Image 1: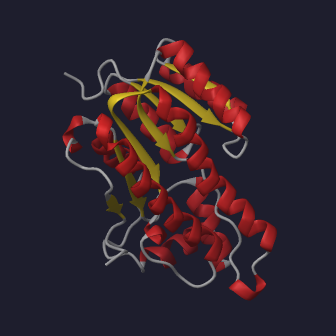
Image 2: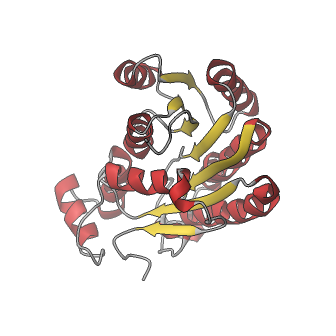
Length: 252
């Protein structure tokens, strides 16, 4: 039997990268998926690829509470209660020393990652079936950090605090809450980060980052999706409040 047979999953940032790879894998494992994101065209393409019987979507800014409420309501109306929530929406933010980091940019990064995850959990929790799984996509820099990324690293660490609180609050219903911490992954999102950080062309920037990874390569989105599937499925039935590093050894 497929690992997510008859399950309903809600995924933010679901139109590309890790979110879309996870949606594909969830669907292949028997789930029906609701994708939320900002890019209407890409969302529609994802639904067409997965099939309208399996997938639905809504254009959703996770920092807008009304839009989050509406998206969750659409998913529940279409597919019923929720079994898996994957909070995946994110932005990278500026790269600059703290003394030069734009305050409004810091606030925006915190809003997308922390407020966005909070709003999703707040409004999805009442619709979660007992035994459901919630996964927040943090980052290797939610376990470590580096110079110049105060906005992103602070937000990713804050998601861990949110996860640990939610894990304790949800445990009585058998609902598990965990974070996944990818290292550099071959996505448009990561390529933008690397070219901004290094000022080098994408292929050169990727090699610079590879040199910092013990396994000496980027992940592919499907590798991260498989780890999210592990956390979503009964394979991880005794895991909650955990930080799962999938980073090629960068956190060591």
